[in-house]
Length: 283
Image (cartoon, rainbow, N blue to C red; front, side):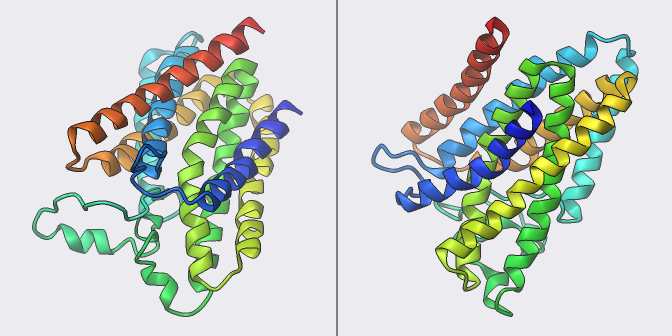
């Protein structure tokens, strides 16, 4: 029941929170003291890194599994998620296209343009959405469903290891899915869907997280000896998303004030995870 509740909260709750932020007119840069998508990216990156390095990995290394095998699993996991990213099955693309683009090296634009499907260009460009009406939306929902299913399995692995780890993992997934789903909702509107239809469709994709959680519970429960490796795979997912997807989007030429804000929100993500861990442990 805890896994089911946590996965539904992370999967659907993140969609509704994203819709609320869009309804409130949250801008991309968080100007004039407002919370923006860049701030949420920083918060999510801090939460993911803290969850991986302060909780999931230490829990895995406290087992009887060898350090060499666990580090090898971590390496293979990072490469695996890189390949999924290449296949457009795991790419988050939280960027909403606000602010100046990072400087590109010669020839870099070709690789950048290859991700028309990626949500990174959806904020204002929506290149693929202006083609055949509705096709881009279904591509997004398919990719979302695959990704949410994987998130559910990762959350279930954490819960099986320890209830506290499960809560922390669910919180981290929730944090990094909010900016992601903001992009999804914007693109769904661009494909012709009404606000309500877009919310329902993206929420259904988010609900797949619960299916992954249920399957993950039975899968991990039957493979208790492999639990440390499941935790390391979950860590590799969080580390890859933070370092390959979120943080690169924060590497922009910003003012000193905006840079300090990014750092503070990154630290806030780490602090929130630590506080939730302490509360869960005390409970």
